Amino acid sequence: MIKCKSLTKTFGDLNAVDNVSFEIKNGSFIGLLGPNGAGKTTLLKAMIGLLDPTNGDISYDDIVINKDTIGIKKRIGVVSQHINLDKELSIYENMVFSSKLYKMKKKIINLELNIY
Image (cartoon, rainbow, N blue to C red):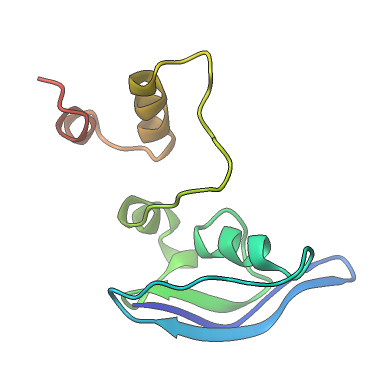
């Protein structure tokens, strides 16, 4: 389960996300709708550990993301609307690069990428 409790993110005087609370139960799908500048991307960046919230907590199965960002990143997957692949690298090289960004152990990378 994902929980956001009283999540706020400010940038100077700009309140990008203001006191947002919700729960997403396991096996559920959600969508975020709103106009440009509504805070959707900021909320998602906080939820995946790319931004620290100004206030509030985000937790995955009762593990607070601020306390174990690397551990949470190992457990979640994110598909962006933008292609984040380096066009100069092969798909395999992009996967190895991404796994190293998330500090995955070589043993796990080898299993996940079917390298024997």
